[in-house]
Amino acid sequence: MSNSVKSTFRALSGFNYRVWAAGALVSNIGTWMQRTAQDWIVLTVLTHNNATAVGIVTALQFGPMLLLLPLTGVAADYFDRRKLIMMTQAAMGALALALGLLMIAGLIQLWHVYVFAFLLGCVTAFDTPARQTFVSELVGEDDLANAVALNSTSFNAARLVGPAIAGLMIAALGSGWVFVINGASFIAVIFSLTFLRVHELHRETRSSAGRSGLAEGFRYVSRRPDLIVILIMFFLIGTFGINFPIFIPTMSVTVFHLGAGQYGLLTSLIAIGTVGGALAAARESKPGVGLLSLTTALFGLGCVLAAVMPNYWLFGLVLIFIGASGQIFSTSTLSLVQLSTEPHMRGRVMAILLAIALGGTPLGAPIVGWIADRFGPRMAMGAGGASAIIAAMVGLYYLARWHHWRLRFTGGHFHVSRDEAAPLVEPRATAAE
Image (cartoon, rainbow, N blue to C red; front, side, top):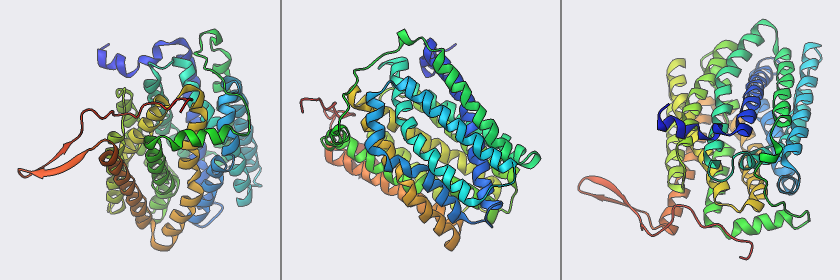
């Protein structure tokens, strides 16, 4: 095995991370199956191609991330993350199973999907920051960036398989069985957590519980210009840019007039890009705001280009490019934030980051869905691309303001220069600050 390959997959050398990764991959496939089935039944079974309804479901599913922010980050820093994740995964499995049984029984209505989306969002709000920060306990500081990237690779590799399986199952058996299978897939994660070598975990100092927990997190972020600009960029991308549950099905159904199988393939095509992007990020040990600015700009340009594609296959090819650039941005962001944040503050800072990114979806998804209904899916994708380009401009402003980056045009070419003494990553704030 070459050194570059070993470097890309170095986190897998540890037993605990290998066990965790195996269980997560099974669950991730089920998750993508359910996401595909849920968007499909809302758009084609429970409504007549109503993108706004899909946006409402997305908003209800991600809204609790912002609503429960005062509790979720503190929980990730205070409680045993391994036990917390076991409880949240079990609850998510039970919700998927219950909704699947409603579908199989023929009792499903749109308001049922709304309720279950909200309940799933509440559980996910506790699960996500705990799961993201648990990675540092599995591998330690040295391999943290690599492990975060490999987690993203697993999630998006499942995206290659899950939607395609879901499309076939919807056509052959109906959407209900997709939810049932996803419910069963959470058992794999629970088993993997059970079999971990607990004594080998890289335990971190636990924070004390208290009402000031979240306020302390905000104070910490307010002293960090790098974290502030990352939060702004992630908000713009998460609110208006990463709305693929709206972009892909509406383009598939109302623009290209395709069925469930072709829709599932589009979701798998974007996953090809996200897997490549995650693997590329795995080789990057020190991501910086410069990389984030570049990838957001590429993501935005890709969305604009996809919005004008004349046919299904060209649209699918551009989705690969969008997936790669968007994944490098999100994976690098998660790595950068954790690497530059004190261990005892990671849960709260990650909860704030995820709440702003994913919690912005309740604002953005209905707006993007309304744009798709009113002006067409192409215009909705264009709006998402514009938000990403604005995010890139925010990042470039930060680099110019804090790191003295300059863009000059000389000799017929653009040149970028920077103050070499300026660090790529802001120093960690300390508790004494």
